[in-house]
Length: 289
Image 1 (cartoon, rainbow, N blue to C red):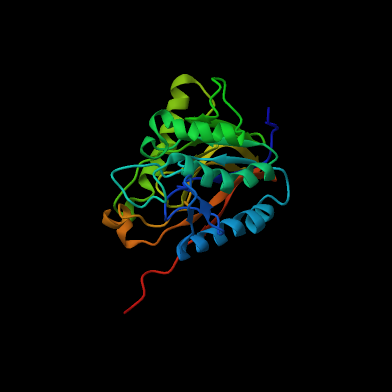
Image 2 (image 1 turned 90 degrees about the vertical axis):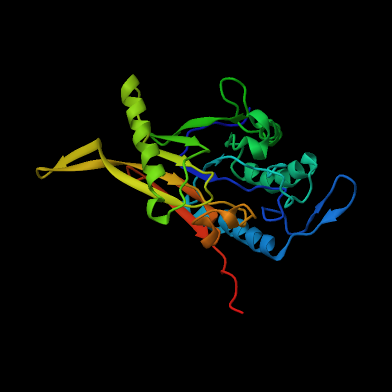
């Protein structure tokens, strides 16, 4: 059984969509089931360079070299979905092999403190069967039902409580990009209050392929100094992704105008405070002709 020791750092990534010609792919290419080979595109090589910078430079800096756990927050493979033709291969074993090659060093780097969240069924199969198989192969820590890829995760980061789940609402308007994220945080607090449960200090979602963070003051962890009350806070964040713009994105209002947001984040507890460090990249828009 992998170690589930408590840590003060949770590294969160999601939406690699391995198996897509716009998703994460090793720079040396990948061999297919029938013996052929796929070579990554120029964009995929850029994404891989970001991926390596994230793990080689950002994570050690953000965690201060301390031990960390990794949470993969869903959609590790692209699957065969919506009649799309952007996949490297429609053989799901090929897609799984790509994802395993990308993620095995990550699991080794966190010394087995690896958790996996189930993503969207259109990508990872009904009941996330393809994600479950990969998570088990990678050695993800199972939940109480024995699921290696779970629907959600409540995880301590130091003394703070963080909730992970893949899905969150979306919007076609940049002016309301924070609305669904803030709403998710409020609903977590309402649900916790209804049943007398501890509310999360932070929630992390994915699915939208766009980073955002909302933070609100709360009465939790309040302290009084010189007659003034210092409040605590609650955080809601959405991760970036590791996939370029697909044909579906090019027709979505709002999203069709933006460039991709690649990257991940670190939830960290230090100096009696929980906070989030992120590393997000993008690429240039189409050139002027």
